[in-house]
Structures are given as C-alpha cells and as structure tokens.
Length: 321
Image 1 (cartoon, helix red, strand yellow):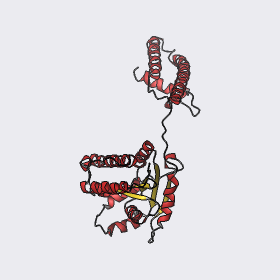
Image 2 (spheres, rainbow, N blue to C red):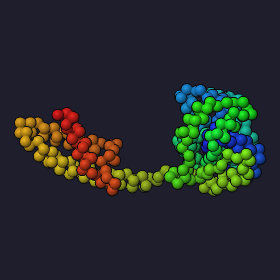
Image 3 (cartoon, rainbow, N blue to C red):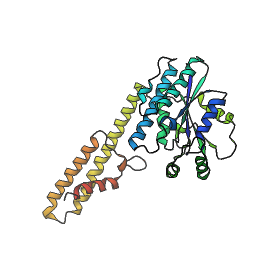
C-alpha cells in the first residue's frame, strides 16, 4: 500500500507557497508530489459570499479525501469532475489527471505527498486535514512560510500570472493568522517555520528532509476500544455522582444561610423559603440531566465551590421574587 502524506502549506498571500509547490513538483527528488492549488480550484474568486467560500473549501476537502481513497485502493475509479460543481471544472480535471498519472506508475515503494496549497490562516482550516490524515492513517505535516507584509505586498503587485489580491484581504489574513503552535497543539507536532522573505530560494532538500520526518509517524486514530469506552463512561458516572452529592450538601447549607437573611421579615418568610427550596430542587434536577455543564461551579481542584452555587441560587430566587 502506497504511503501518503498530507503536507499543508500555511502563510499569508505572497509568501511563496505556490512557488514552493511548483518547485517540489518539478524538481523534488525524495517523493512524488501532487499539487492541490486552492486558488486555481476556486477560480480565483476573491469576492465569494461566505456561504460559497465555505462550500468551495468543503468541496476541496472532499476532493482530497476521494484522491486518498483512490490511491489507497490501488486504483479503481476517480470521482467525476461534475461532483465538484463549486470548483473550476478544468482545474479539477487537471488535478485528477495528475493523480491518475501517479497511480499509473504503480510504484508501491513511492511516497505520495499531497501539497495542500492555501493560506490556512485559521487552525480550524488545518485541523480538518489533520482529521482526514487520522481517518486514513496518513502522514501529516505543516510547512509555515513566514514573510513580512511589505515583501509579500510587493510580490503580489508584480505577480507574473496577473492575479491581483485586494490589499484589504491580505491585511485581514495577516491580522487573523493563527500560526502553527507545536508546543500547545499536539496535532501540530510536525510543523516547521521557514523564512521565505529572502531573494534566494531555500534548497528543496530542507523541505524534503522535514517532510520525511512525518512519513514514518502517520497520524494514529484516537478511537477507543469498547473496554476503554466502558471505563471512561463509568468514571464519568462516578465523577458526576460525586459532584452531584457535593452540590446537594452545599445547596442545603446555602438554603440555611439564606433563611437567616429573611428571618426578620416574618410575613413573607414562608413564601420566600418556599421559592428558595423550589429553586434548589430545580437546580439539582438540572444537574442530574444529561449534558449539564458543571465547570462554572468547580474550583481549580475540580470540587464544587460554594460561592458560585450561592450566586446561581440567589439569581434564580431573587429574579422571581
């Protein structure tokens, strides 16, 4: 079975992602490369509505998934171009033809690297491809090309292909860019920053050596065994029962404290106490229901904190009184 790596390119417009991909496709020596170019596939539509923009991105993700299945199954049938009607039909055709060419070589020892060429400035954009890698147990890495805004702007003004990107769009991406963080995000472990701001291109071997590090470490599924699921569910039930018991004892104490506050008003004490008790019962009933979020009522050690429960009960009671 052929090894596959999803190599996600990340960086602001003009940083050199597409140029790097083209260099790897034409001159890379270690791997077989397939270039998935978002700009071409979406037809360079910058002013898409938010809905159309999301649809095109979702369709490219689906297209990549289809390509992975085709390569993993040693052939079969590639999807029809018409299935991806939100994308440029000619570009989809070129991409599928490139994949067909790779498959026709029938080289089981080759490693196919799918170059996912887009800005990928949100973590969520990159994570969707990590999930795909997990689904098929693929290699996964992120190549982050860093470059100054001024350098990128100058490059964009002198693009050879004539495609211009609005300066406001570039600034938005710069402001919203979420850089890969392999320290805080385990799934971004195989990510590396390359400075692409110089006049000379970095040797391809540097990129290929980095990609090689993730080939032997494909993303493993996080699915639990039936036994692990049972143990997890039992632990959750025990923890929930413990928190519920803590909350009940704490609320009873709070009700006692609140009764002392209203003792001076003997006329309304009975009515107020009745509402306090009713709200305590409602709060406990809510805690017993599935999906209740205990987090706002926990301290740093994971125990119920009286202060937060007091505030919640008083809000429930005195909003009605």
